[in-house]
Length: 263
Image (cartoon, helix red, strand yellow):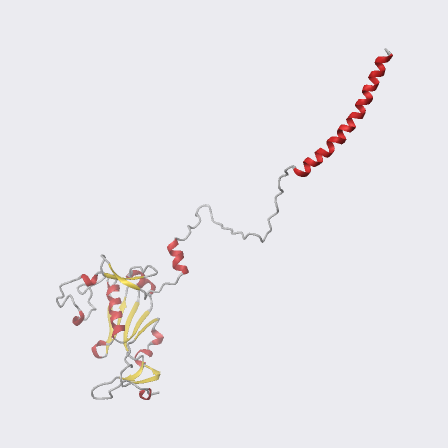
């Protein structure tokens, strides 16, 4: 009986000594495990700085949807300016807005169809810029833009031709009334579009400034006064809302010298 109790006491004493030794042995193993293989912890979200990302706020009512993004063609047209003078003539099946049989403002000696030109293929062309699209001329839109305004073409035969072409295109939407004519060969004329209270005029002024044209009975050169504007159109300048100037190189002749320019 005494022997059994002694053996039991020795076993308990050995167990008490073994437990601390086991803990002391496991502690370095745990530390080494944590050192080489640390436990993964979820990354805490970083607060967003107010100035880190710009915010765009779009507000609209529930009844009206947000506007759609502009098409790529429109964005490109807004970014790159178009050179309308760089392009080529291409065929156009729609044809022009007028011809020699539909426009009364074309002069008789310039009316190809009336004088028997047999072909009509020259009418089916349009100008196509290389870098952008040139919309077809809309006479109603143009008349709306120049409503209650006066558009004046000032220059030589180029200005006259541009005016007559514009009149023919506008006449396809609203008939104009010739309200004024003067000068040799009606070089000073004005039309009025009653539908939009708009006026279109032409002023013959090949030099834009005062000058004397060469002639068989006068000087063999053009005499220009560069410091005096031609009063034949300048006196009406305060009545013009839009002025289109176009002249040729009338002053560039072989006998032209600086001494012939009168100041």
